[in-house]
Length: 245
Image: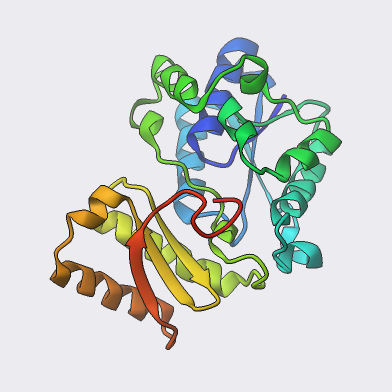
């Protein structure tokens, strides 16, 4: 079995469960490495597979060679997943992803690509929500990984219709890594909008910041962006900017 391993809690838990049920030698973990994947996620995947003795394949799904993906339409995720699942399908007949039942309530064009490539969704079949996945993660001994906040690919931070550029994704990744170093494991997003940059923080984390600290954060973000586009600091709200968060 091939597991599409993004580095998020869903696919990490599925990988651990599959290895327990099928045996480590019958599971291949596949992680797509690209400018849209946070460096921390790739590092997490490598550490996870090494710690558990699981076979890991790092692949280039080729989405950046797809003009439809780079154009960043509202269904950008469809083109990304089409490239990914097409690549993984060539590695074996059974491909599984960590989709859970909570995902079915969102607009997820990537699920269409999954259906077209026959991708399995074990958590959906088991009627497991995100909360259920976290419980299973703790049972499987994933420790602190069970508390990982949701973190969609970096391309989801770019406003629909703006071209997906690797240089912008690199800025986004660096800003988010910097903020996590300052604030810890909180929900945050760095977004590129038509009107400039927006840094979104968990409401409680944002409320705890003094005016001086907010100004310092904006100044640090400015150094990473290295352009004259305005930077706004605001509360994170799921669905506040784009279809796929």
